[in-house]
Image (cartoon, rainbow, N blue to C red):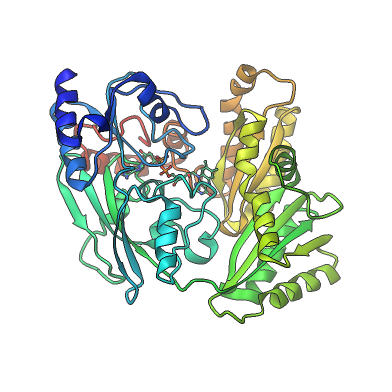
Length: 468
Ligand SMILES: Cc1cc2nc3c(=O)[nH]c(=O)nc-3n(C[C@H](O)[C@H](O)[C@H](O)COP(=O)(O)OP(=O)(O)OC[C@H]3O[C@@H](n4cnc5c(N)ncnc54)[C@H](O)[C@@H]3O)c2cc1C
């Protein structure tokens, strides 16, 4: 591999080929610490041409590449496998804003821009880029595109796929496809960008994108609502939608055990309500008009529900700081769960109307099979997307707990499939669900996916062992 390292150093410069074990280490393990692989080296190209040259050099040596953005992915897609024969390509240095077109409401950015930097670039021009995730300070737009990230504003603006107009991609043979078109209408054959969005780096390396922008919200209202059941949460979602329409920007569900983990582990977080409830809804309304009275609109929805006895308690944020502290209760759940210890995670979606049934059936089936497991559920209920996570019993051994993963997954995923849902709503398949998906997608769909992979990456050098 000395030849390959020499070639890569000639392309990106000595200091941007990380071959020492300690330099490689942060790129070889995932955020949750569940996947730890080994790479020949990490290459850090500075621009699209260098990405293409790195891909070509690796292909010439028959070496597979693993594209990596902010490495916040939750399914082991961005880290190398254990064999030590892959090159990680870090996109972090492709971090320029290439263009902004306020009249067209588009922003052209390179893949290595963090999501927070993309949001800031839009804000500088009085525009909103609405994708929003708890990992936004670290994750990169290339990673968001490759995992078709969702987050808390899908309800109003759609997921990353729906926010994208054009892409630039380095293909498996090193060719560069320039599809950086800022068009909202373009029916000229197959829409190729959609192949690469959500492909988790298995079809090509995204190097830049044209993204949609929106008017920024100038009014905002946020409420934290206590409810007796998930059925009541879904009922409240329907009422809020009917009353507030497009102003409803986020509608999240948080189960009591998830809130308790945040209160236990995250300094500065406190329960905004006096009496504990089974579950909570976090509701956000926004409007581009500065004088929209959103608090009044939200108050009206909540009062009607309270009068009908469907809400036990609620708090409406009275200041920006209070809005932030209510959001912190939701956004810190993943971090709190990480601190609490190992967990078996499920990122599932079902039709919104089936959420209560899913929770009732999955809770009952799991409690019967594994009475000591702790169910920590929360998520984007407005999108029908739940993070249905199972925490280790307090006294259990990590290895014993993890040994139950397949059995736990089977129970949860079979119920999801029975309700017409998906076993990966927004995190992708990566290494985590690569085998599992074959049980739930039809042979026809799996064969179509394999044909696309074969057509675009016939040598199997783009992030092998992920997705398929
Ligand atoms: C605290 C926390 C909260 C999160 N909340 C959410 C959430 O609400 N919604 C959600 O959807 N996700 C969420 N995630 C998951 C994660 O942040 C997203 O999946 C994010 O989009 C990954 O971006 P990244 O840059 O970190 O990608 P990485 O983890 O580096 O990579 C993800 C996948 O994309 C591939 N990839 C990365 N960059 C490129 C590229 N330029 N070209 C081709 N392939 C590439 C990788 O090979 C890998 O398969 C959360 C994660 C954390 C840690």
